[in-house]
Length: 163
Image (tube, rainbow, N blue to C red; front, top):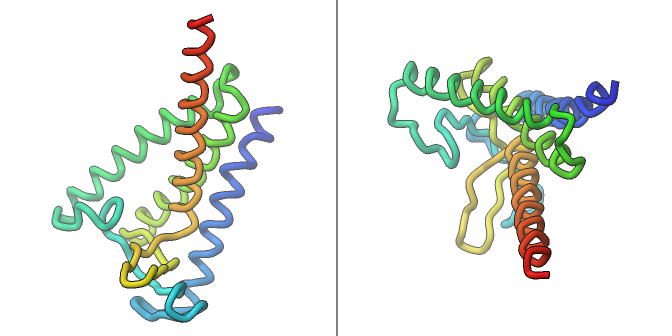
């Protein structure tokens, strides 16, 4: 029962991501932009057919599809097993839940559209950041928190060994 409750975390992330993408697809056409904070933040609809930051777009569609399908399944099995393992600490489970929900959202995009729907578009002065989505945000937050937790755990273990 407890594992079922934990599944609400990635399911919620997935629902937020898919809902936001459905909304933006109704609101904008590809490459159309809607300024929210002029000169800083816009909603701009784009489709990322590649990997992170649009990499691997030079690969043929069939190769990308197979590569992303295999990588996605391996990641889903690996992180899913960690997420559901009884011995996984709560903090790790939260991080993994964020990552899994985001990865599932982007994976569903790839299956349904052959590309990931991106729409959050930030500009910092003359620097234009890559357009991204809510799934990407959850994946990043989960990964950063997981990394911080690992760093803190290694520091604590190092201090314990010194004593």
